[in-house]
Image (cartoon, rainbow, N blue to C red; front, side):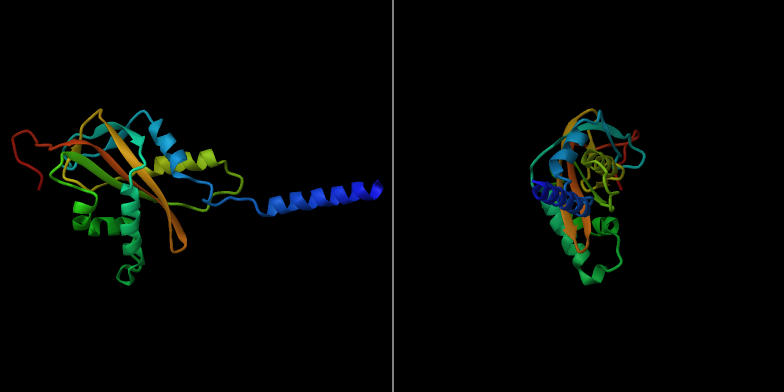
Length: 194
């Protein structure tokens, strides 16, 4: 009986040691649905005007399973892995692909705000709860949104956000595409967007 107890104790100690050594701290446990929940629970999200002098809009977003973020991630993967773009930041590549978004993600004939955003994930501290990681990603995604369409978001409207977690080379990103009803902002006194 004593041998069995010692063997069981040794086995348990080995299992606990192995569990400590294989602790997951990276991005593997992050998922789009969890990040989407945090975004859905935000009271409103600020979307800037296409026209720098135009009013900003505040909208709510619902996570969707649409494949927009997959298309965005695939296009960004092609740009990041392109040898001509070595040293370029992904945010610069978004702006360089303006023509590519028209047709792929944007139909400028449709009155719709389309915003693109991404976050490069850091190495999270070991032991950090997955809920903290997801909430951090949700807020970082909404800090800077690239406007891909020629329309402003309608204030107080409800839009959608699609999300995709993608590893490109050695970096992991979360890509997002935001869609809301849109309108053309025309400043007082006429004129349009240059």
